[in-house]
Image 1 (cartoon, one colour):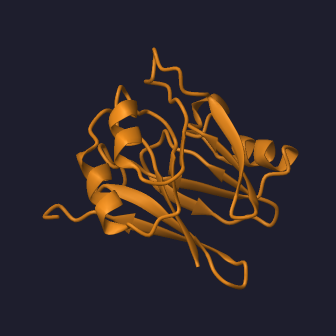
Image 2 (cartoon, rainbow, N blue to C red):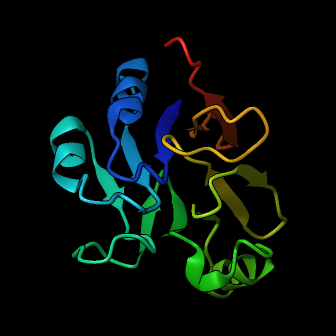
Image 3 (spheres, rainbow, N blue to C red):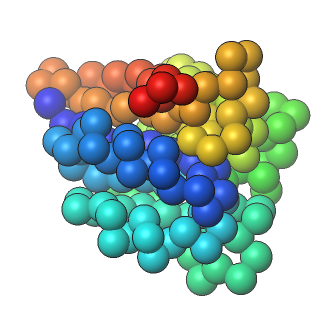
Length: 164
């Protein structure tokens, strides 16, 4: 089983990210979908595996890339924050972009709401926010992405409890 942790919208408050990293020491990579807000060095120093991190709409002076296309676990992945694709309105434009680039999965953030949208051509996955969640219940969220021995993708929305 291959495992990655996908996060977004930490906004310079990395405490919950540190908790997630402790919960998943077996993660083979970490994907951050932007709005790091000056937390880049802390994140790089905390992660002991490959790290893929993009800039979000609040990463004004960051040298992080706007998007990353990468092959991870045999999948072509697009990592973006999502604000350039109007994801607050709909993810369809982003899904079309992923399909046009022959991506299997698009990871994105920006809305602070977790979402897993299964498509026949391309999955669109948003981990929500570890710092400022906006979904009902407002628990900090992230995605556990696993690829099983049969090559099937599994996306689990995971939440940090307030008392953790």
